[in-house]
Amino acid sequence: MKIAIFPGSFDPITKGHENIAIKAASMFDMLYIAIGQNSEKKCMFSQEQRLEWLKTTFAGHSTIKCVSYSGLTVDYCKLHNINYIVRGVRNVHDFENETAIADVNKHLYQGIETVFLLPDKTYHHISSSIVKEIIRNNGSIKDFIPEAIKM
Image 1 (cartoon, one colour):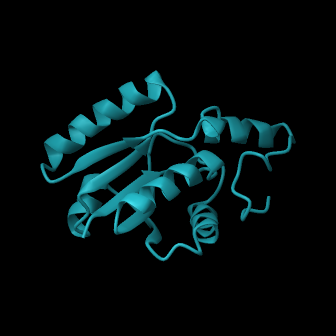
Image 2 (cartoon, rainbow, N blue to C red):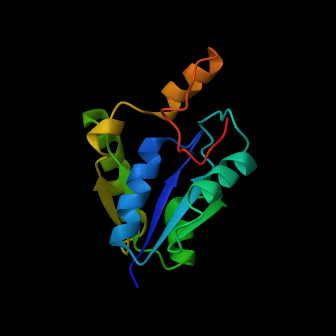
Image 3 (cartoon, rainbow, N blue to C red):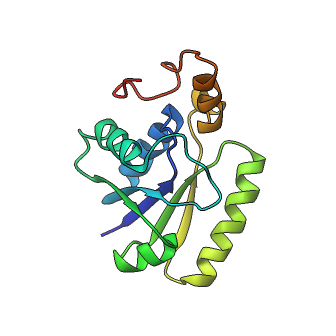
């Protein structure tokens, strides 16, 4: 079985995340969409809320499992026999950052491969940071988050 993980903070999940996840789900037998705990990020929403949004967004997809975890992504991968990490890349900055992380992950776990996916052009401009800024300023985010999410 080809099993992949799409890790992230998903704070909040965006239509860009949803787009990448749907693409990845079509490529693998099982896709874990996983909320990792990143000590450098201060989240706006609780882990429980973010996990609920993931489960709601992907409720109709039998090959997607939404989870949360702590520790290194590669350790979670080893524990669950996951051999692919999926990362969305919107621009050159994302690519440079994600390549460095992929290199370290490969060093830590030879059995892992990172797969970079581009979001559809419609979603290149969307990031969780931008969505949070819109929220902080009382703007409408309905065009940027999955339709299943009600905020």
